[in-house]
Length: 190
Image (cartoon, rainbow, N blue to C red; front, side, top):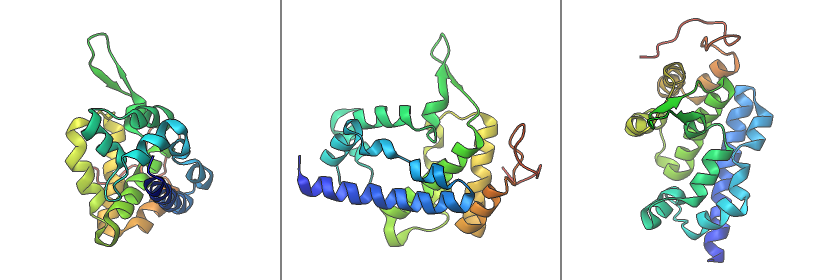
Protein backbone atom coordinates (compact mmCIF):
# COMPACT_ATOMS: atom_id res chain seq x y z
CA UNK A 1 0.00 0.00 0.00
CA UNK A 2 1.23 3.47 -0.88
CA UNK A 3 1.72 5.28 2.46
CA UNK A 4 1.29 8.68 0.82
CA UNK A 5 -2.10 7.66 -0.61
CA UNK A 6 -3.14 6.22 2.77
CA UNK A 7 -2.23 9.47 4.53
CA UNK A 8 -3.98 11.62 1.90
CA UNK A 9 -7.06 9.38 2.06
CA UNK A 10 -7.10 9.68 5.86
CA UNK A 11 -6.93 13.48 5.58
CA UNK A 12 -9.70 13.56 2.96
CA UNK A 13 -12.01 11.35 5.05
CA UNK A 14 -11.25 13.40 8.16
CA UNK A 15 -12.04 16.66 6.37
CA UNK A 16 -15.28 15.18 5.04
CA UNK A 17 -16.25 13.91 8.50
CA UNK A 18 -15.48 17.31 10.03
CA UNK A 19 -17.73 19.14 7.56
CA UNK A 20 -20.54 16.60 8.11
CA UNK A 21 -20.16 17.01 11.88
CA UNK A 22 -20.42 20.82 11.62
CA UNK A 23 -23.50 20.54 9.42
CA UNK A 24 -25.15 17.86 11.56
CA UNK A 25 -24.55 20.01 14.63
CA UNK A 26 -26.35 22.89 12.89
CA UNK A 27 -29.16 20.48 12.05
CA UNK A 28 -29.48 19.38 15.69
CA UNK A 29 -27.76 15.98 15.46
CA UNK A 30 -24.21 16.47 16.79
CA UNK A 31 -23.71 12.91 18.08
CA UNK A 32 -24.83 11.46 14.75
CA UNK A 33 -22.40 13.87 13.11
CA UNK A 34 -19.53 12.46 15.17
CA UNK A 35 -20.51 8.89 14.23
CA UNK A 36 -20.84 9.71 10.52
CA UNK A 37 -18.78 7.39 8.30
CA UNK A 38 -16.74 5.86 11.13
CA UNK A 39 -16.72 2.64 9.10
CA UNK A 40 -14.39 4.37 6.60
CA UNK A 41 -11.62 3.77 9.16
CA UNK A 42 -12.30 0.00 9.25
CA UNK A 43 -9.84 -2.28 7.47
CA UNK A 44 -12.61 -3.39 5.08
CA UNK A 45 -13.04 0.17 3.81
CA UNK A 46 -9.80 1.99 4.51
CA UNK A 47 -7.36 -0.34 2.74
CA UNK A 48 -9.15 -0.52 -0.64
CA UNK A 49 -9.97 3.19 -0.52
CA UNK A 50 -6.36 4.12 0.21
CA UNK A 51 -5.25 1.86 -2.64
CA UNK A 52 -7.59 3.63 -5.11
CA UNK A 53 -7.17 7.15 -3.70
CA UNK A 54 -7.15 9.90 -6.33
CA UNK A 55 -7.99 13.07 -4.40
CA UNK A 56 -10.52 14.59 -6.78
CA UNK A 57 -13.21 11.90 -6.61
CA UNK A 58 -14.27 9.01 -4.44
CA UNK A 59 -11.84 6.07 -4.38
CA UNK A 60 -14.94 3.88 -4.45
CA UNK A 61 -15.60 5.01 -8.03
CA UNK A 62 -11.95 4.36 -8.94
CA UNK A 63 -12.17 0.86 -7.45
CA UNK A 64 -15.36 0.20 -9.44
CA UNK A 65 -13.63 1.39 -12.63
CA UNK A 66 -10.63 -0.87 -12.01
CA UNK A 67 -12.31 -3.99 -10.63
CA UNK A 68 -15.97 -3.70 -11.63
CA UNK A 69 -17.23 -3.39 -8.06
CA UNK A 70 -16.06 -1.95 -4.77
CA UNK A 71 -15.53 -4.06 -1.67
CA UNK A 72 -15.23 -0.85 0.34
CA UNK A 73 -18.61 0.34 -0.92
CA UNK A 74 -20.35 -2.97 -0.25
CA UNK A 75 -19.18 -2.75 3.35
CA UNK A 76 -19.94 0.97 3.67
CA UNK A 77 -23.53 0.97 2.39
CA UNK A 78 -24.40 -1.95 4.66
CA UNK A 79 -23.12 -0.17 7.78
CA UNK A 80 -24.33 3.40 7.21
CA UNK A 81 -28.07 4.11 7.20
CA UNK A 82 -27.63 7.55 5.60
CA UNK A 83 -27.21 5.75 2.25
CA UNK A 84 -30.33 4.90 0.26
CA UNK A 85 -29.03 1.38 -0.49
CA UNK A 86 -29.28 0.54 3.20
CA UNK A 87 -33.09 0.97 2.94
CA UNK A 88 -33.84 -1.03 -0.21
CA UNK A 89 -35.12 -4.58 -0.09
CA UNK A 90 -35.94 -6.75 -3.09
CA UNK A 91 -39.10 -8.69 -3.89
CA UNK A 92 -39.29 -12.26 -5.15
CA UNK A 93 -38.86 -11.10 -8.75
CA UNK A 94 -35.91 -8.88 -7.90
CA UNK A 95 -37.89 -5.65 -7.98
CA UNK A 96 -36.57 -3.02 -5.58
CA UNK A 97 -38.75 -2.16 -2.60
CA UNK A 98 -37.52 1.11 -1.07
CA UNK A 99 -38.43 1.79 2.56
CA UNK A 100 -39.07 5.26 3.95
CA UNK A 101 -35.75 6.48 5.33
CA UNK A 102 -36.01 7.91 8.86
CA UNK A 103 -35.79 11.70 9.03
CA UNK A 104 -32.44 11.91 10.82
CA UNK A 105 -30.77 9.80 8.12
CA UNK A 106 -32.24 11.93 5.33
CA UNK A 107 -30.74 14.95 7.08
CA UNK A 108 -27.39 13.13 7.32
CA UNK A 109 -27.64 12.23 3.62
CA UNK A 110 -28.13 15.91 2.79
CA UNK A 111 -25.09 16.85 4.89
CA UNK A 112 -23.10 14.03 3.28
CA UNK A 113 -23.89 15.33 -0.24
CA UNK A 114 -22.83 18.84 0.74
CA UNK A 115 -19.61 17.73 2.46
CA UNK A 116 -18.58 15.36 -0.35
CA UNK A 117 -19.08 18.13 -2.88
CA UNK A 118 -17.10 20.60 -0.80
CA UNK A 119 -14.21 18.17 -0.30
CA UNK A 120 -13.93 17.00 -3.90
CA UNK A 121 -14.90 20.22 -5.73
CA UNK A 122 -12.97 22.44 -3.32
CA UNK A 123 -13.23 26.14 -4.27
CA UNK A 124 -15.52 25.46 -7.24
CA UNK A 125 -18.31 24.11 -5.00
CA UNK A 126 -21.61 26.01 -5.17
CA UNK A 127 -24.89 25.55 -3.25
CA UNK A 128 -26.50 24.29 -6.47
CA UNK A 129 -24.09 21.35 -6.70
CA UNK A 130 -25.88 18.91 -4.33
CA UNK A 131 -29.17 19.21 -6.26
CA UNK A 132 -27.37 18.90 -9.62
CA UNK A 133 -25.59 15.79 -8.32
CA UNK A 134 -28.86 14.28 -7.06
CA UNK A 135 -30.59 14.92 -10.39
CA UNK A 136 -27.62 13.45 -12.29
CA UNK A 137 -27.64 10.15 -10.37
CA UNK A 138 -31.36 9.94 -9.57
CA UNK A 139 -32.36 7.43 -12.25
CA UNK A 140 -30.10 4.74 -10.84
CA UNK A 141 -31.48 5.00 -7.32
CA UNK A 142 -34.55 3.74 -5.53
CA UNK A 143 -36.31 5.98 -3.00
CA UNK A 144 -39.61 5.81 -1.22
CA UNK A 145 -41.62 8.69 -2.77
CA UNK A 146 -41.94 10.49 0.58
CA UNK A 147 -38.18 10.22 1.13
CA UNK A 148 -37.42 11.60 -2.31
CA UNK A 149 -39.76 14.57 -1.71
CA UNK A 150 -37.94 15.38 1.53
CA UNK A 151 -34.50 15.12 -0.10
CA UNK A 152 -35.61 17.46 -2.87
CA UNK A 153 -37.06 19.98 -0.41
CA UNK A 154 -33.74 20.28 1.39
CA UNK A 155 -31.52 20.21 -1.70
CA UNK A 156 -33.68 22.90 -3.34
CA UNK A 157 -33.47 24.97 -0.16
CA UNK A 158 -29.68 24.67 -0.21
CA UNK A 159 -29.62 25.82 -3.85
CA UNK A 160 -32.04 28.70 -3.17
CA UNK A 161 -31.12 29.97 0.29
CA UNK A 162 -27.90 28.21 1.28
CA UNK A 163 -26.73 25.44 3.57
CA UNK A 164 -27.30 27.33 6.82
CA UNK A 165 -30.97 27.91 5.99
CA UNK A 166 -31.47 24.25 5.04
CA UNK A 167 -29.86 23.20 8.34
CA UNK A 168 -32.13 25.55 10.25
CA UNK A 169 -35.18 24.04 8.56
CA UNK A 170 -33.91 20.51 9.17
CA UNK A 171 -33.33 21.28 12.86
CA UNK A 172 -36.87 22.62 13.18
CA UNK A 173 -38.29 19.70 11.18
CA UNK A 174 -39.95 22.19 8.86
CA UNK A 175 -41.25 19.52 6.49
CA UNK A 176 -43.95 17.15 7.71
CA UNK A 177 -42.40 13.76 7.10
CA UNK A 178 -44.80 11.11 8.29
CA UNK A 179 -45.92 10.52 11.85
CA UNK A 180 -44.26 12.53 14.61
CA UNK A 181 -42.16 14.61 12.23
CA UNK A 182 -42.39 18.29 11.57
CA UNK A 183 -44.69 21.17 12.25
CA UNK A 184 -45.03 22.46 8.72
CA UNK A 185 -47.14 20.58 6.22
CA UNK A 186 -45.80 22.30 3.14
CA UNK A 187 -42.64 22.75 1.21
CA UNK A 188 -42.09 22.88 -2.49
CA UNK A 189 -40.98 19.36 -3.29
CA UNK A 190 -41.55 19.48 -7.01
